[in-house]
Each structure stands twice: as structure tokens, then as C-alpha cells.
Length: 235
Image (cartoon, rainbow, N blue to C red):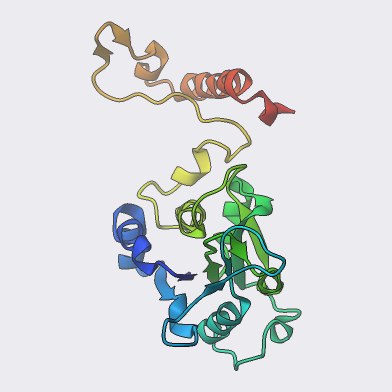
């Protein structure tokens, strides 16, 4: 998979994409990542990417002109070719905007995005994005009912959740298949050494070596935890 992020703060991605699973995914050749500075497509000596909103109001709005130019350039289209050139495309490349009005991100969406050949994230900032730029989007995603300073952090969340589902990224071959939300439930409790710590014991069934009983216990724990903490998932 190739991922491109168009942002006014490309350095924000350095630590996230240069550590842990995201770094290893790139080293394995499973992921190619590029962060692009939106200012490279802005006009004028100051390379402005924002301006005051029509109709007045607080804050600044990201201009549509550099956003269109950046997306067209990153995808290799001629200036003015989008979005008409992508009409009826096969979905192997998806342009994603992060915004409060987007569809709320979940595990199912992460799974779908993990199968794409290429993802292009457009990271908003300031007061918002010129509405006309949304005509570029295949997906508009929100990671929750709150507002961040920019789309960079939100895109990192989506990238991490999607990339770790690509076969070969996680060390455990089926690791992503048994996590919370993979089957609509929260994951069962996990334990490791020591078996006893400050009076707290690891459940005996996990020490039994009886895999059938362990599977039954884990399923029951998963259901009980979901009912207690996230009953909305059982509706």
C-alpha cells in the first residue's frame, strides 16, 4: 500500500511513521509513505494556504486552489483534471478528508481501507476547508465527536488502524483478527508472567493448557466485558 498525506505540517508524521509497526511495515515493503507540504502548491511569496471566510466569521479557511493542485499533482493528473477524471474509478485509490461532518471511523472502515492500493489523506487545519474541496473526497471521516487543531492527528489514527490490518504487518499472523471490535465485541482480558502479583492471580483456566476451556472462557469474558462497558455494541 502507498499512503500520501497532504498537510501544512509534514514533520508531524516523522515520529509516528518512523517508529514501531509503521516503521516495520515500510521496512518489509508492505507500506510506502509520503508526507507532502501543501505550501509547495500555494501561490505568492508567502505560500498562503488559508484566507478569511466569505461572509465573515472567526478564523481562517483553507483555500481550495492549493488543495486541488496538490491532489492532482500527487496523483499524477494534469491541472484541472479532477474530480471528473476519477469518475467511475475502481476504488483502488481513495482520497480521504478528515472532518467533523464525516462518517465516524470504526473497525469495519479500517478493514475496508486496508485493502486499498493507495490512500491519499488531505489534512485540514485552521477554521475549516473551503467546501468546494470536498468534491475531491471519496471518504470524509471523523474519529469522534470532538474537534482537533488539524487533521494530522486524525489521519494518523486512521492510518495506524488500517495499516496494522495489512497481512504481514503484525508479528502475530492472526493478531488483528482477535482484537476488540474485530467480531463486534471487546477483547477478553489478557495476562502474562508472573502468575501471581501483589495478591492478584491469573485465572486458573489460562494456566490449564486446555484450549477448549480457554476459548470458552475468553468468549464469555468478551461478552461480559462488552455488556458491562459497551452495551451499545450488543444492540
